[in-house]
Image (cartoon, rainbow, N blue to C red; front, side):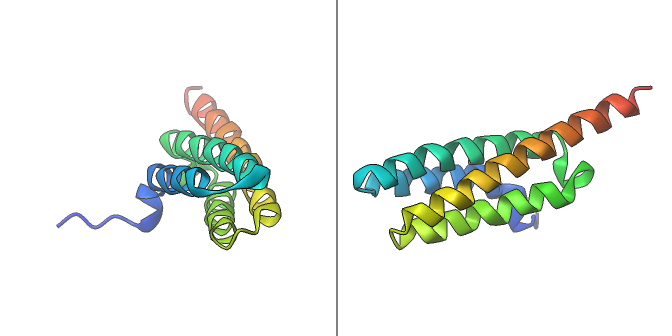
Length: 109
């Protein structure tokens, strides 16, 4: 039996859930949250593909948890906070990507 952690499947799953929430949201707040959450989920998936869980665990899991919290806030229509959490997730995922790329470059020396 293959047992994988919640985080190992999270980015694709989070992207799907974020998209559903965005489609069901009304008003501008939901629209902007949907865009930001989708971008953050995409960056998180890219970070995972680069091995950020190993090379930048703090940044990766910070992004993961903030995206999760963004979805939670959006589900209660608190789009201002959801947008803030999604933005923080995207920034942290970007840093995880950068650190992971640097680790890969350093390994090739």
